[in-house]
Length: 389
Image (cartoon, rainbow, N blue to C red):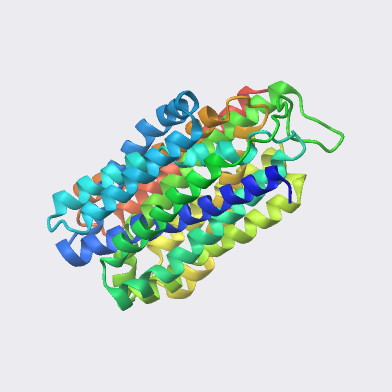
């Protein structure tokens, strides 16, 4: 294994740890707020919207600052802020204090994902970038699904404080690995200024740009659905009388399906620059999201997650793939990619919370409102595609 490979696999290790720690904390924060402070779906959606807004406003700038300050300085800053916020949060006994700690942790996280996305493709040849992006996606998706699956069990075994202390320990390890990575010799840089789609039929630059715009539009809507779903999981668990452990088992299925989708998309490039794949995934996203939140049937919940996982897998993969294509400023493009995620994380829960506020008599008001928002996004995707012709 040469120095380039060693550095890249160390990046993947840090990335996987980051995914596990952030999912364990942020996904189960809503269960903690419900159990400790009696938060309803509306209150949890409001918290999710606040965190999404913070992430959207900070990620883009964090990606730009990382390029200016240096990737490793940005990573160390991000991990340090997140670890400090979790350590303080574990000691706080008020809802306001917990929300403040979550905001600080979110700001710290803004310095991690854009940099990790840039590091895995930096100094890679154009032909190697799709391979690196594929491993990157599979790594975070695997640890994401694993943390989601086991998080409820950890809570029942060690209590809710585990969502603070376990991620804190992992983040400490990430900081140490970053110091190690920083001291490793740097490989020789390779020019990476041509499209990364290579099968003998490379797309025109205009097409590359257009699909980048399409994916950047679609991805926030995927996260509108994801973050809304995560915020109301305690309510879904209550509806089906699931403990946190069984909620983790039952409601993490889409994460494993997304992982399988990433593996398939990594191995098969036939979806590259094919609009029908993107629009089909978006349509499946809308239908499966509505079914998960509205249909009061456990079998429907499980089956719908299969379509949901495939849909968000293709949409996310498209956004990151096209963001890295023909990009010589990867942390900035990674920042745009993450800011788009933050925008989705804000708008979905915000619309859901407002709907429950003004239509409190309808328990599914939030689900219907967010489904309507997703439908509007599909219309926007079709319009943007048509405007390219």
